[in-house]
Image (cartoon, helix red, strand yellow):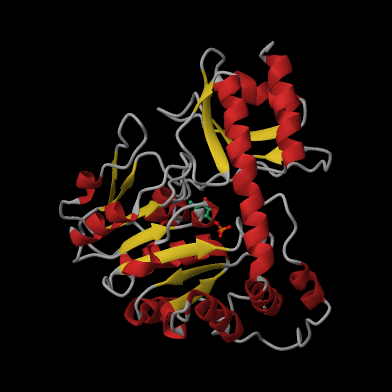
Amino acid sequence: MMKAWKKNIRQVIPYVPGEQPKETDVIKLNTNENPYPPSPKVKEMCSRIENLRLYPDPAASRLVDAIAGYKGIDRSQVFVGVGSDDVLALSFLTFFNSDKPILFPDITYSFYDVWADLFRIPYETRALDDAFQIRREDYYGENGGVIFPNPNAPTGILMPLDGIRDILEHNQDVVVIVDEAYIDFGGETAQSLLDTYENLLIVQTFSKSRSLAGLRIGYAMGSPELIRALHDVKYSFNSYTMNQPSILLGAASVEDDAYFRETTAKIIATREWFTKEMRDLGFTFPDSKANFLFASHESVPAKEIFEAARKQNIYVRYFNKDRIDNYLRITIGTDEEMRKFLEFLREYLHK
Ligand SMILES: *Cc1c(COP(=O)(O)O)cnc(C)c1O
């Protein structure tokens, strides 16, 4: 018999992150991590972490100021959180409170529908076109809010700034969130639109372009009114989300711009080279402006390649999902890692 208390349990289907294998001798191209270590300045700062006895600054001012200074905006326009997942989840809770459905693409970051379900936010998805592009007209109608990544994940396709502006023009009554997790790999940020659109929230992360997935730092940029609302919700939930080491190490990362530019440029160069090699092997894919390639082979099913690669300790991401189940999402690693992956493919595909 069903125990009565069970009906009061919140039923959720959680997000499933990519595998984090226990072995170390693997080529890990499955969760879009950066193959390069964080800035040496981050390591230097490690030895200067102190005062762990005390609660951290709940406003994470040192990190907020570093980001605001770097971006050339006011500190009242920056909110930091424990990875952009934390920032995005809080943003769903804070900004998506309409009876009308929020809108996002059918093929996108697979956490969005999980948060919508968790917070009981009504939502509708809008199908990408056959080339996996977001159709901006799909976001014109009445809705309770809009969210999409740019570049989109897992496609890697960038929407040009005029597309973002157009979606904002048609959505002045709701909050529009642009999730720029991959913007540093060659895309144009929507930051220049912040002055015009008070309802625009841009979310970025230290996990990919700053090689700090393990620290958990994400942030939002928006009008002071949006940022204040995020703080109010955060302080109603958990004041001390950002730990002291993250605040210090995150700030150290921001302060080393030369290293940031060098490593992102290396990844972009590897991506462009790898793209050509993959085309020669019979793969097709949309033009990627992210640190991954979303690729499909002309004759061999993606699932078979995924499984064969895994047997060789090469991890890529496969989504067993409608429309994209013949694609692999391959993170751009070092040149050496990509060479080994290509070697595996040549052998496997008899090329
Ligand atoms: C990786 C990713 C995030 C989350 O990154 P965090 O590690 O939580 O900062 C958010 N959105 C998209 C589209 C991502 O790919």
